[in-house]
Length: 190
Image (cartoon, rainbow, N blue to C red):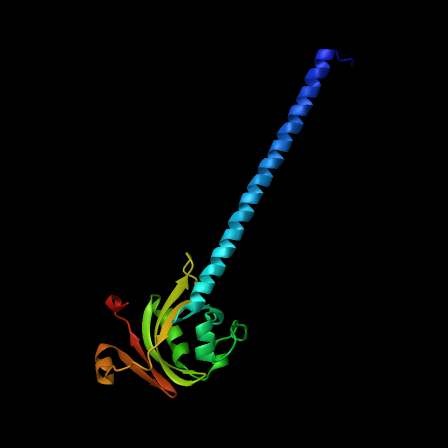
């Protein structure tokens, strides 16, 4: 088959157009990939900034998985409560780190209640027994599968002036062998 000049020109133009379209698609893909990479890097940066912000808070903050193993805790909790470096705590349960039962029991109550709970509880820390006011929130998937617990708390040992008789009127105090926890489950106080 012999092509005349016009047919050759059209054939070359078609091939050139195909190459140009392919190149444009490739450039668009690279542009989208670059934008995606920028978004991912921004999310990583935001995550790091949030973790840095959490680390400078005066409260203790933690995330535990469904087996109640620490996934994250801020520097204050690692140092004040456990007297350890964070990487020595991640992946372990409270029981593996301390002999106090209060936090373990309040985790289970939070899981069973399936809602945000507030506790005043004793916790044995690296500096001895301390009293913490804690909020714990259970996390569930859309399918209602338990995912873990997010918690925050503050040390109220030095300013704890609550009359224990008043506590028994407002909530339930449970004495444990090595301390106590006080369960407050009033929605208006949460």
